[in-house]
Image (cartoon, rainbow, N blue to C red; front, side):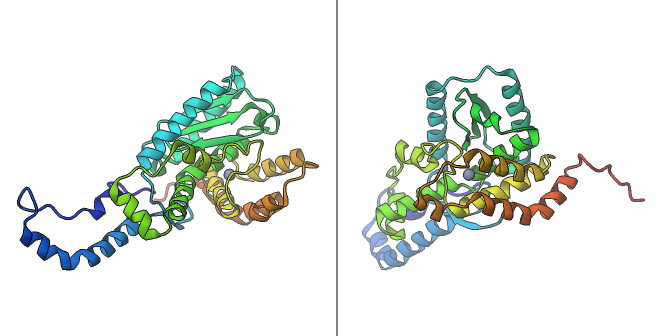
Length: 303
Ligand SMILES: [Zn+2]
């Protein structure tokens, strides 16, 4: 969960204000010996404040990007998607997505407290895919409904996509890009310190990797498996049967049978059998969350 009142990264490289409206020679002279340690402390602060804990798994990850900026850019990209693709008028599909989306969004409330949820079915029957973006924007391509048999299965897809958002996989990817581009952690801290905007819209869109399309996973192996695990717990907490998540992978596997993927992709992404095995590993925990969701058990009064 995102801790409330987290300091903005830009603050850490500023020197405490002088009691006079301008720095005096004495101020500068007194501060100078500390500049190196100050820079180091600032770097440390940037790194420490740039760590966050992934919900459900508790993994510690790096987040050096400006969250508000990523959210704003994501919303702008979502608006572009709405302009680019026809929005579905299929009442059943739209109702199913809203029904499932509402329940999942309640479960992730504390992981995305600022989300302004929006669930859109895009009428693109050849695309078996869905995505979620920072700010609570969720899109499903109508092709997905070809392989989805019930609300539980739709919930598993939506929960997986939302898990990528609550785990801040896009933020992590952008942070890693910044580290590569600026050459070092110190360079990144300096960029953050200057307040220069290091993010471009294309970088944000690239981080979502929406170009891959058609049921192809957008992130690397570890992030996909993490989203599978977090999504499984989310759907169960929302009262959807987690066992249906395995069936969705089976159906995806059947759909993609005979469609070869490039070897480079296979070496960096989990295979469907691997995803299924990992889901089955996590199933006891998910079933416990499912039972605790209150849909299957009557409350027991202890006197
Ligand atoms: Zn994914």
